[in-house]
Length: 192
Length: 80
Image (cartoon, rainbow over all chains, first blue to last red; front, side, top):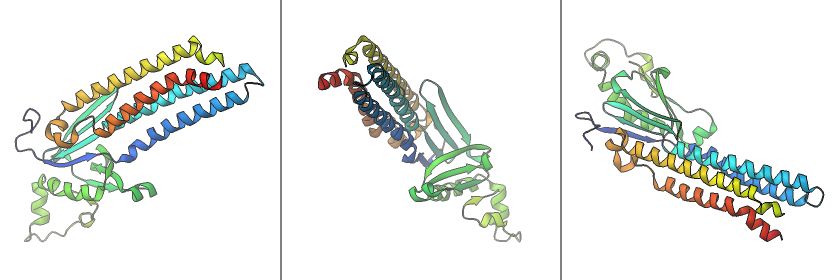
């Protein structure tokens, strides 16, 4: 571990490399660009005998479409491959880059996190087993496309509770007569 | 079909190669930035970038772009 970036006693809790579903749109775009190119080429050949000018226009259009969509697809792929999140026992680190446009690195202290919600919406998320982790009801940037989000939530919760000593005394002290808040009994969210 | 080997297509091909170089250069910069970030330093085993998958996609990208550049002359020869 490089001590230059590490805080004393910092340990890795969870590394989140976003679900592979993020690569589907760029892949579809790349395929679409080549399909359009082949279609334009075929159409150009078919109408060549009828109208030479139109034939040239169609193949030029196909070439421009390929030029734009092919590079856009790979640009989006390279962007998506840089999105990663690392959760340690002290903080949440996120890196989100867009080549030549933006470079976002966020470093959120773990003590700021009070609630973690798991959201899996739609058939795709249920089938492919990914979801989002909403922190502090959206106050802190949400972690998107988390693979196995319930497992990630279970892994994260003890560390967040450990950062809230006042709450631990109230909720987990066996001699305390305070009733457990109903929200705490939910397996998917923790409210502090 | 002579226009497929015209200078116009050569210009578009050159533009495409330039775009590819700029994009790969940007990806290399992103790699460098990522590998010097706290994430990579704390968790270097799995957080290194580029990954094998990204490298393979970059190679496919280069090959497809080269094919794209040579496609018009190839089609010209095939069709004549």
